[in-house]
Amino acid sequence: MDDWLSAVPRLHPDAVSVRSRGVLSVLGPGETFLHTFEDDAGASEVAERILELADGERSVEDISRQLCEEFDVDPALCRQDTARFVALLVERQVLVLAARGTGSPLRRKE
Image (tube, rainbow, N blue to C red; front, top):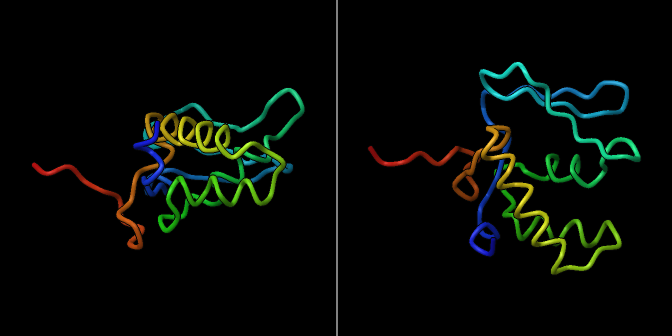
């Protein structure tokens, strides 16, 4: 997962996010499944914060560093969990990877 640390995620351009009743929900492109970020205790502050920080400017490493400042978490575990979560959201088309500083999604060469 170390290769994900330099990745720069942002919300997929065709995804829609909304906060209702204090819970963030995201609908990916072409999906009918609404992603919510909840755990047994309710809304997951960390998951929602990752989505807020995934702005096309910050790398996964930057996001992890910010989470360590805001939450009481082991930095190594935070980096690993953040990278895994971002990878999952990219796979589910909630996030895309952007070229650092552009906010534009990276596209594969044809």
